Structures are given as C-alpha cells and as structure tokens.
Length: 199
Image (cartoon, rainbow, N blue to C red; front, side, top):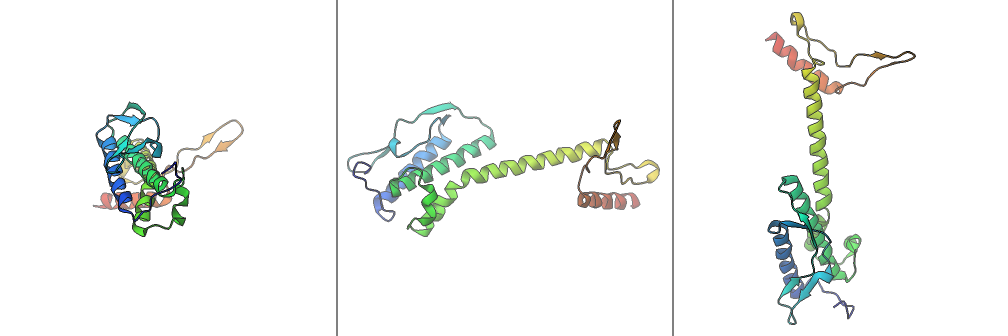
C-alpha cells in the first residue's frame, strides 16, 4: 500500500480484521513479553501474507527487562495503547505522526472515540501518578506536623491553635514561615479535637 500511495478505509472488512489482529499482538507484547520496547512500532514493522489473512509484526527492537511494579506496568500499558492508535491512524491516512489530524478525520465516531482515548492513555496515566504522588507527600507532611506537636498541645486540657512554625530572626531580618497546612484543614482539625476533648 505504501508503494502505491494507498491507504485502508475504516469501513472495509480488511481494516477491521487487521485492527483486531494488531490488537492481539499488542496485548501479547504488553502482558506476555518480559522486555520493553526499545523503539516504537510503526507500519514498517507490519507484514501481511499475500492474501491478507495473516498479520505479523517483525524487526521489533526490545530493550531492558520490565519491572513488576504496578505503576510501571500501567505506564507500559498506556504507551502501548498510544502506539496502537498511532499505527491504526497511519494505516488510515498513509501518513506518519498523523495523530494530530484525528479530529479532522472523516471516520466512524465510535472508532474516533476509541483512537482518541488510546492516544490520551499515556497522558492520563501520568496525571494519575502525579496526583497520587502529591497526595502521598501531603499525607507525610501532615503526619510529620502532628508528630512534632505543631497542631495540637493538650497541656492542662487546652487546645493549641499554633499552626505556624516559630519565627526565625537573623541579624538583619525576621522572616515568617508559611503555614504548614491551609486554614480550612486547620479549622476542621481543631473542631474534631475540641469535640473529642469535650467528650
């Protein structure tokens, strides 16, 4: 097809068959292979038999061994989804790196949605990892503050509202540190403590 400058049509049964076979191949590489890809897969790695009923992926370059970590596996899975979508778009357009043209492509809306979600898989996974990391950091900060007694002082049954670290003075300036936690979290925490003390 590349030699003749032609591309597949999304409603042709041959495209649907190849898309299914390629999906199986990508799934096998994702879940059964012990090594990650060293180079992206493109149409150049795709080979078919003369009558088109067999699809092969050849000349694939593998790199380091995969990690068993769940986050790492999700990252690999999202990369494979994006690569799969880019390969299908290349088959439909006969153009490399044509994923940016997806919104303008005249294809079935369901297929377009599938390709769109596959292309965004890596981005969504990265955002989830960032959110999980930020949440973990905040949890450790709050635990550390509570251990140091920065939030609560129950001496003589009183509740402390000391939510700021002590002011530090230098020779020429006196700098005040930022609050350890925000005001809303402070008020909620103090309400719980006061109710617990009263009980």
